[in-house]
Image (cartoon, rainbow, N blue to C red; front, side):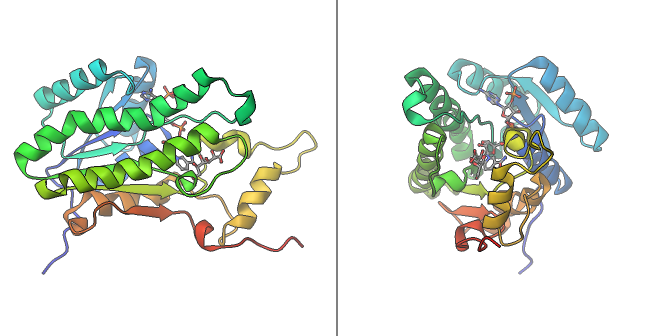
Length: 265
Ligand code: NAP
Ligand code: GCO
């Protein structure tokens, strides 16, 4: 029996994929044969994304859509179905983080993170599942986090959202596995993207950011990971090769969760 990692003939919607992890995952899926559709909040970012995909030899279609807005999401999914075709693969990638000590965070700030990182994956998944049921197959990949398993100072909202996203992943598996829909998560470790740039900034004296040194000591490979390193696991979870994998969070973390950390020299 040949194992099918191909995404030929599939339409993949990757949310928030003008750059960063979403762009890397979408690019990997395109190389595996998928037709890429993506969204971003601002037209200028959608345009920049389209140009970046084109430069990578990928003919991606971009849509302006705030994933927290159910009306916009439903309209986008309908427009994709009309212009490209029904979504076969959904990657709930769009996300934000606010690094604020919990007791200094406002309820509105907490809600904003939950809205993008947890409510939106619910909204977008709900928009694509009916068509997946009709067609007898579908793949949903939720971009979770180390914070789906671990906490740390200043990321209470983000950890709550990503912990919830782990359980939403398991619940979509439980509720829709009977329709040949597989819903899994990818839990990236610490990846070099704009979202983590503040954690890697050089200090005024030119020394490495303390968090940069901390995370490298917590990673067996002693380095930050690159967005492109998530593409292979994403293609696997989007392909028929993973049809028997459901409700699983695949941690692509360089071994962080397995490692107590390097002893300080
Ligand atoms: P990023 O560089 O900040 O990119 C996030 C993307 O999401 C941007 O394109 C952003 O668009 C978009 N977005 C944010 N809010 C949106 C909304 N309401 N509607 C539509 N798009 C929205 O982040 P990243 O590092 O690539 O992370 C991508 C995902 O991986 C996130 O879910 C993040 O939590 C997760 N993750 C990241 C890491 C890491 O180390 N970087 C590790 C684990 C998990 P705008 O630019 O217009 O805001
Ligand atoms: C942070 C980082 C992390 C990463 C990622 C780790 O402030 O700790 O932003 O949360 O984004 O989620 O998996």
